[in-house]
Every structure is written in C-alpha cells, then in structure tokens.
Image 1 (spheres, helix red, strand yellow):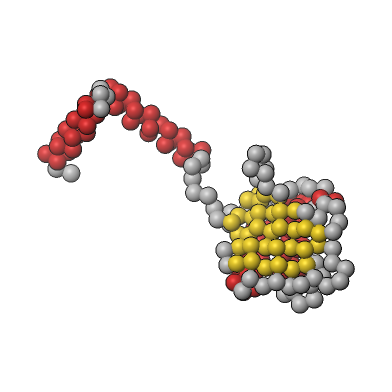
Image 2 (cartoon, one colour):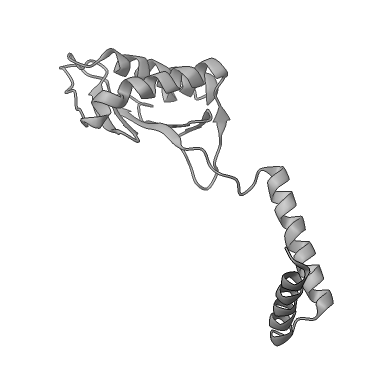
Amino acid sequence: MPQVLRHVLSARWRDAFARAGVKRRGVARAVSAVALACACLGASGCGGVLSPDLFIVYRGGSVPGAKLTVLVTEEGAVQCNPNPAQPLIYHLSDPQIIEARNIQEDLKDPASRNESFPAARGSVLNYYVRDQDGSVHFADNSPSQPAVTRKLAGFVLNVAQGVCRLPQEGA
C-alpha cells in the first residue's frame, strides 16, 4: 500500500476515533484487547465452525426406556437425549464415525422420499430419523424396511449403551 494512502487511511481512522471521543491510547488498548480475544478464541476452538449433523434419531415404543434421542454430527460428536441446560457430548471412535456416515449415505434414497415403513403386529420400538435429505419412519418389525434401517437401529443401541453409557433399560 503506498505511503500516502496509508497516511490518509490512518488519518481517517484517527479522525473517526477523535469524533467518538476515543484517545490514541484507548484505541491501541482496544485493538490489543480485540486481538487478544481473537487469539484466545482461535486457540481454544471457541467460536469455531460447528460441524453439521449427520442425522438425529428419535426412538419411542411400548416398553420402559424406549424413549431415546440420538444426535450424531459429521465429526463424530454424539448427544443422547440432548438437554440444552446440561449438554453432554460424547465422541464416536473412528470406525463408528465411518459406520454412521455409511448409514447416512444408505439412508439418502429412502430419506429423500420421506419413506414410512409401517409396523407389523407386536412392534415394540419405532424410529424416526431425520437428515439433510429428509426423513424415514420405521418400526423394529416393519416387514418391508430396507437393511439400512436395521443397521441404524443396531447403531443407535450400541451408541446409547457403549458411548453414552445409558443403562440397558434406557438404551
């Protein structure tokens, strides 16, 4: 940047701060404080970009402990029964992240059509999964459900018990 332009810009800023009643030292301190805050946020990871959700699964049913919500993000963060007041975030292992991404990819077709697979008689658990492509409703014994829904039901159970450490009756 040419020296003249740099001088004009600094003069404009100096004039703007002077009109606002801020002295030179105050400007320097404010700039230093902002720079320090930005450095701290960058170093701690606060204020960074949140990873998108892969999917969220709502499970319900006719047995105690059937009600469960599992939220899985792209980076492998998991919340079981999310509570905004006390967010407990767990992390999937690398193989579990790959499994979750594969499930989400396999759900793309039925989710984009917002498919619903009705429960057969004697159903115990029902599931509703939502991702960026749409949603799928199914039950544990839906006769025409695709294989991915069975994989998803197993994944939800394994994550609830193994990652979130929910008791067996709550998982």
